Length: 410
Image 1: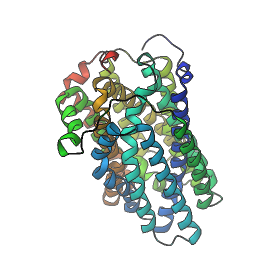
Image 2 (image 1 turned 180 degrees about the vertical axis):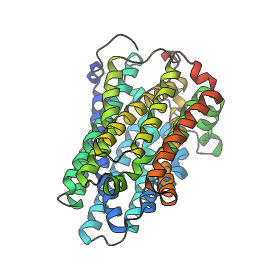
Image 3 (image 1 turned 120 degrees about the vertical axis):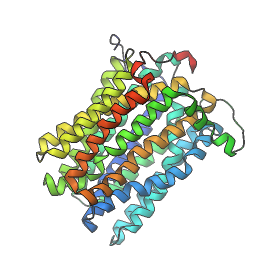
Image 4 (image 1 turned 135 degrees about the vertical axis):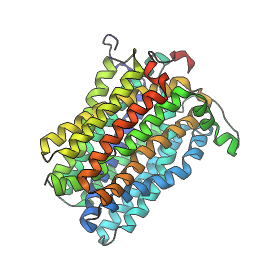
């Protein structure tokens, strides 16, 4: 890591400050909703498989649309795309509120809303990843990445805790407040001035849509970095099982569940703040592999403990390890990618991230239904460690990588 620098100086750029505020509020709202959705679904069915379906309902439309969303992020104003997708998330929150007020007696309406949410997120992901480099000067980009990540994880910290506390007053309270936050997020994103990006009017043919995938395949270091996250977190997605762990193993209620969901974000936020002041500049490949390894070890601890405090500590360290991997991967992908195809490459990256999260949640629910809750978490941690070791061998360029590509490649 380098000597400390002023990690908050990047906030002097108006567009970045507005974008950061908007994204933080939207993330806070979605995290609050996630607690309510998970607890509602499990309270209705007490079925571990249904917890996995929450992830699948979001990932299926995401997977179908993401490459076209990447093309859209290169062709249209990324600011407008983000504002529109936040508006779609607001609509989802209002629909969940309406279902709850009407008296939710089945889970299929929730899954239907999550399909719409996954569709909106498909278009939001590439645009949010690709726009950041357009909002700040090149010399401030690494600070912007770290601060953006820290604010995201602050929202991940606060959102579940607030969601758990507000759920004590009922799920409709959670949905009302989260919808209000999304209104504010849409307004702030609309205030961001149009940012300069290359003009791309290519039609959405298979050739142009798949340009990002061809680019990633041609860059072993990029392919290795993003596929590491895919397979490691795919097997280690124990967060989908937190409602069951909270209820059946740790024996805590909605507030305890909120704290458990908060812990990874707390670890990630503190780690990302440290990275804003002490950015990683040497042995970046080993840092990334080490971060994923920590994630796997802590998943094993989570599966082996019945202590609420130990579970919180394991989740905290999981978040810190994951943050190191995310930080290195994001900088690496953005530095390697020309801006003209940044949206499409970000779409490919989003596919890998989405698969590791939502599809990982489905895998966790399916495995838990087959193996049992505790064994499924332990299996996930062991598989994550196995993937980390395998990728160090399959992609030696990662373990040997010392520095990031020069920033003037952007």
